[in-house]
Image (cartoon, rainbow, N blue to C red):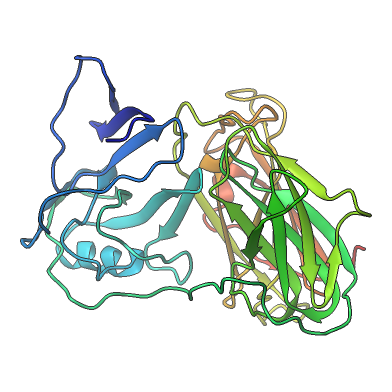
Amino acid sequence: ELRALVEIDRWQAGGWDGHVCGLPANDFPVELGVGYFMNSAANSLWTIGGGPVTSPAPLALQSGWNAIGVPHSNAYTAASLCAEIVNQGVDALEVDRWVAGGWQGHVCGLPFGNFAIEIGQGYFVRAGSSGTVTPTLQTRHWALGSQQPAGPPLATPAQPAAVHALQVSNLRDSSFVVSWLTDEPATGYVRFGEAAALDGVAYDLRGANVVGRSHYVALSGLQPQTTYYFDVASGGGLDDNGGLHFQATTGPQATALPAPFTIYGQVFQPDGLTPAGGAIVTLLLVDGDRAGSQGQAQLMSALVDDHGYWQANLGNARQADGSAFLYSATGDQLLLLARGADGAVTTLAADTGGLRPARGLTLGSQGRLP
């Protein structure tokens, strides 16, 4: 049914086990409660036939990473799944999902990075112990986030808002992030497309109608190795780069999945106590131990939430050619720059082994940047 499907992989005994579509080798069974990765050569829609699963599916978890699915309930979030696993006697450490060409992770017990666990989707659970867990048949569906409108949001203010500190980050095979600051509070969104017509619209991760001086927009569902043109809209103004449009080119389709490695920390206002919600953290991963990839990775970024937390995943680091940056869990260096909505900044250089959590950052300790 999926003519573009190239390969189906499963995570087994701490490593990948794959079946190349159309070949007779390694045709393994697809089981309930297990997560799988499907490599497709193009965007596709797969409609799964059959009836719904009505009995809870047990999850056999081993110490380390486990690929799982919850085929019988839409009730869980990453946080509540962590709690369920712990309540049934297994030490849950982290839940990750592969989305928009990269890893998104929730560290169990911390108030950030939560997302819905959906029927038909696969997830990775990192456990600190082994055991069998059976998620219950709950009925409440957790709704995270709000539906985006079909058109641009109501502009606030009506006058154009000056754009500065615009950057492209988190550039992968099917997504990238555009972030910028404005001199005054405004709504913000991005118009984009493969041609100058710019027929797509993407909104701030915090919601289409959020008003602020920092703006953070993720463009996803893109084609690999394709140049996209974009303009940024702030309030009633549109910055089209002097009529030339801004542009970014997505990387090649991932041929291997790098291991997830969630890092996180907090950013505070100059008083050192108030969370700096809306600040943007820019991250530059640099080889420090001459193992794995050499040089430095492409720019990554993270948006600081209302609790002051930022998070990123080193498994999403990419080399200049778009391939995975092979990092070391300790021994490489990460350079961070946190920029508040008012331009106040602070920086941190840390070993990759000291980022769970990173040392807290206080804005203003390095002044302000334009």
